[in-house]
Length: 334
Ligand SMILES: [Zn+2]
Image 1: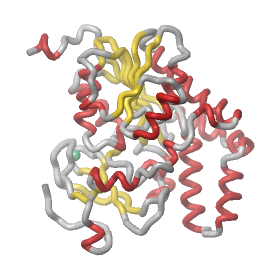
Image 2: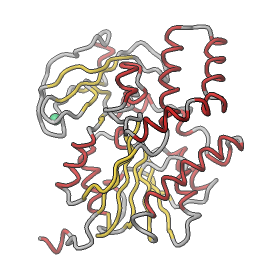
Image 3: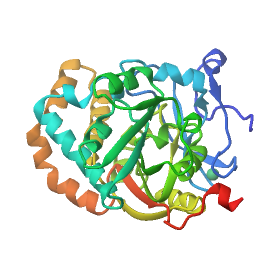
């Protein structure tokens, strides 16, 4: 592990406690360069966090990064992912989110028509609540955040395991579909997680992962303010081709790649970061938010995002992988 100092100012030595300096955990190289640095735009504070690009495999990773213990501070109970489930949204928001969630479900049923689905990092269970409405699907979730999974269990009635994938009590070849919606970039050990996905998926099963698109127009337009960096909660950003190659090594073939959902919300969030950075008056910020996220604004920009998504240049990208039906199990291979 390299012992060089932080390449961005991170305050006094006391403030640096709770951070770790790592080499690229995808390829092992310690050669990298800075691509973004900013404070936590969601929670505030003065600590500067940084993203570096590995010069060997080109994955982008946070360096230095908070230790897992320290990272808990950056996921407070009011962090937006855990505050509100689908059932509590206003009707128009709920309608819009249901539309997006059904699109996610359909990308699965295009490959596999029935079976068991595991949503890794299922949060409050919105996706599984929609997946459950599709005929002949049994749904399971796994989620490390207690408040979110309690919500999913009690409000939605879902079967959710508490924890992370590598300690979950699932047998090899358990699932016909595994999904990771905006989760891979948050984990400390993405390679191990992907290995677990390959192990838990049945032959013929489908794996769908949505993650920040480092080729997006938003990344070029907004630079440090791009939502995809989401520092310090995002640890790894994968080039789509690297992810394809890593999954191929694990025996899964990429069959589809598209900008499936969330492009306009991501772009508007990045615009809000810019506005909040420029205008400190809360009234101006509130007005900007109201205008940007209004139905009229969304409709006006619809054609732009249709084109962006078609060109696969949206802020997020969804990749679909299948495990070939003739894949032998680990035991059979050994
Ligand atoms: Zn690397």
